[in-house]
Length: 60
Ligand SMILES: [Zn+2]
Image 1 (cartoon, rainbow, N blue to C red):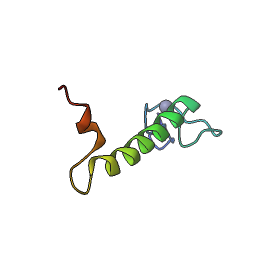
Image 2: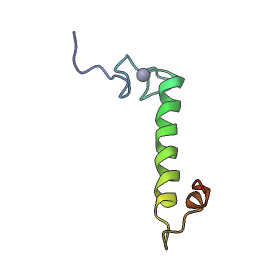
Image 3: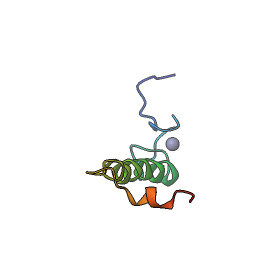
Image 4: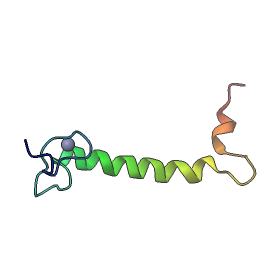
């Protein structure tokens, strides 16, 4: 088995030319979601004064 064949970085299957470097649209979308997920999380967790809106929803 040739070990140099390009493979999907997410699941390791043979990549598809249409969705490279991934094997399918599913893996490509998953990678995008991962990026977006991190991008939205970072600024939300870094509140300047620590007064995030989420804190207002505490029980009480
Ligand atoms: Zn894949």
